[in-house]
Image: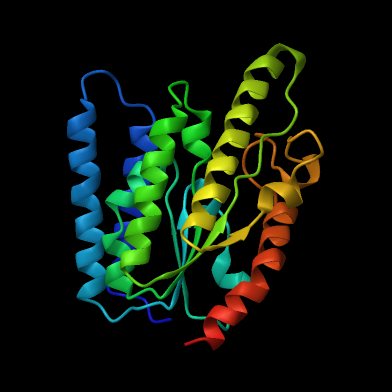
Length: 237
């Protein structure tokens, strides 16, 4: 895939912005934050449209997507990594224009973990927004491969109650994801089923030291699981 002009620069700005946003203080309102995010996405999309880059297949989601080296995993395929650290479903809706800019035809969607980890997690709100996201993707005639969300690793004793609650939220998220994907007739790739243990914890060998993100071995597991679908997507076009 050809790289659009200045895309790396714009991507770094977006990453820096999102990193800083994780530490917003009360002086930045939610409305202002969302406006800044939307504006930055608009800049990114404009940069792609005015460059020479398109991609048939996008990996779209949060920091687990952003941190995986999809280009090395699939060097012969026309792909783009559109993961952004910290993203919830709401932010992926905000930046759908990136898929338009890249003229994406196939999307591997992996989102919902940050929603589940939030102290204000609301399953009904998540369902509404995830359904809207799938509807928006469907309206673009994009073939979507929906990934379930792998859990967190077992916590230290002092943290176990908190981790258990978050993993329970992830189980709720995955139930909603599967239900809505079926309703939209979209393929589900059950990474939670593949990477979690029988109690819903992410297996240690798949996790890096923070217990949340994937290790190199975990990413390789993901690459291997998705490769038949990525190959099929490439051959379909």
